[in-house]
Image (cartoon, rainbow, N blue to C red):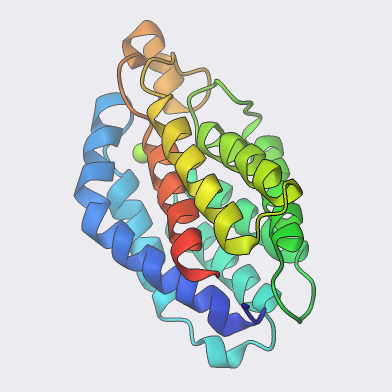
Length: 209
Ligand SMILES: [Mg+2]
């Protein structure tokens, strides 16, 4: 079982920090193809600031994650900062104050985070954004959880679906964000935001259960 506290969420963010660092150059290279070549460096800067937060200073998972969200808004910049910040703020707001983290609670929080991202970015699935990672992940998670899977197995299903959603952005033509200025030339490139968001879900699967 996973006790729902700041340390659990800090474990998630610490894992993600490592993954983003290792993949920062790859993320920036993806962004160079259809954006402005800064997604990896922006995310690495944001996660470095997040890593400097001390989970011991927060009395709940939600309080810690809200600070993470605000930290990303103020440090990541570009389009990703507000989107990631909104995702985590809305995710955090939907979490219970304490207890054990259950599959149902995670589904509710993930759904709230996605609603926030879609409202903020005015993006829907198929627009070649991080929503293309999040929506399949949520569907897979809910399908697994409603079939009786526990948090760990539901997260595993979500991580697989997130990776598939990320890969499915390759043939899409971007309809939102800087990449949309390229029109047809955005085709055949993997979306950087969908790529980093898949890392978020995969990291959750490694750390939250
Ligand atoms: Mg960029």
